[in-house]
Length: 341
Image (cartoon, rainbow, N blue to C red; front, side):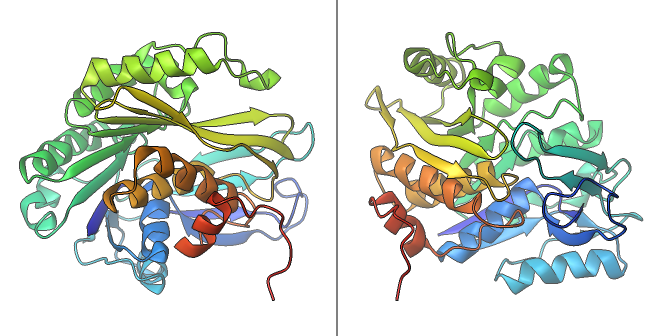
């Protein structure tokens, strides 16, 4: 099975440990991005994964491509254009201090790409699954059109289409996001997100849920999942569930709605001491995609997704660098953290 993902890969700049930005003069560099994170995770899980984007034809763009290739991600359809790679600064939170992200991605190579840059018929040849997120169409009006073109072409080619809603208020308003995401969702088989994304973008509220107080309304979640499925015709809708006790400690789980069986399934909950939470949702999406396209039942797929997201948040950086056996082991109940000898 081959999965194609499309979006922006960026350069991440972060201070060591829990220092604030520029508290020390050094910043660490890494490459990441929601859809790129999914491609890397799926490759590490043993799937064939390809990432499609636009990069500047310079040393930074080529280094980003090499980083993807290092993890076995195919890069044959990357377009080289424009002058810059998007950058973001990430500061990890601790205890009651939240994490912070500052974007410097305006006019990046992918944001300036044109619809003619991507030959979707060629890109989807031999592929089985296409993944996109709500971050990509938020980057420019041109990318909004490209994103719609991509999901249409994927559907026409017979691929399963997944979309992580991934609303980012620093990139676009809810008013601008709603019509674009509503159009994209017409072609989506598997919708991924959380209760906040669904409420902000589509106005679908998860009951009395208040993650800032660690309160999850299970019945509200079920209704939200079902409403998304019925509104857009999705076969599967899955949310990650996060109880934010503090920046350092979170409760983490997942919930999924199977429209064919009209059933809702929830995963085990993991109480995580956070190492780096950025990328956890992408690992969740990766675990779900892997499980579903390998014919694992939705009830077990949500366990795989939650376990992948949990493990990723114990690791520095955005990429989920675990093998599928690590994920399956945790999903199967081995959560003691004891040394494996």
